[in-house]
Length: 291
Ligand SMILES: NC(=O)c1ccc[n+]([C@@H]2O[C@H](COP(=O)([O-])OP(=O)(O)OC[C@H]3O[C@@H](n4cnc5c(N)ncnc54)[C@H](OP(=O)(O)O)[C@@H]3O)[C@@H](O)[C@H]2O)c1
Image (cartoon, rainbow, N blue to C red):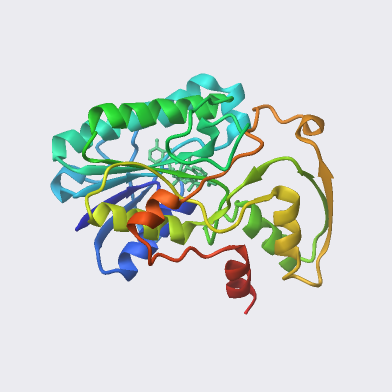
């Protein structure tokens, strides 16, 4: 199968490329502003850009759409830009998939929920609280309407793993400790989620794509925790750290975008179809990083 990963210089897209290569699939991954050894240039907002990789000639079976503006507070203050980078890119890629008769895999979020009763299953009612969540939901609706039999929507949250920019929560802590930094983190003790390893997201999605599944799948791991618990778990593997963790309530933190508080995903639907699939958890990842 041929895969085209849009946003492969990022955390999730980069993990797709790595996983697909390990599995022996043909794959092309793209960047926009951060060229890597593994990527080609492609702007999902401007499909006619002559510098773009020639995707029509490549003829992928599956397009994995990982390009977005994922900074939720920035999106809250920059609604038009959020719409462009999340919704307009998706409109373009959905149209491209229809022209190429390709499937799409889309990485969505728990921010489509309001966080009153998580962790959530796929049939729970959505009610996004933020610009980012509203725009991600618009894309989910678009894919379900335009590619009902050829679209996989993965809802994920708190993704961690190795990435070039080193910006996810866990890798930042690891790097700060490596740099011998002394610092204090004020973290929300009332925001619960199901952090998941990016390689597990890719692994689950590729199984679904290989089997030509469609529809919404929730992908969480076995962890369900708040940010303070997550930070303590990570730091417990880094005994020489000089980090102080202070738990705060969300309303003390002044975050621009409202967060779903009791959130996260239950992977029961996915696991009922793939009962042998084993999700890693934060302990597994930290053992791997510190061994
Ligand atoms: N990380 C999470 O915890 C999480 C949770 C839920 C959902 N998601 C979703 O998963 C997806 C990937 O997230 P991520 O954390 O991997 O994001 P990321 O690390 O910020 O990567 C985003 C990628 O999109 C590319 N990109 C941005 N604008 C583009 C455009 N116009 N055309 C083509 N590529 C473009 C970026 O390219 P350059 O870097 O080269 O500029 C980068 O490769 C997003 O849709 C996000 O909403 C992530």
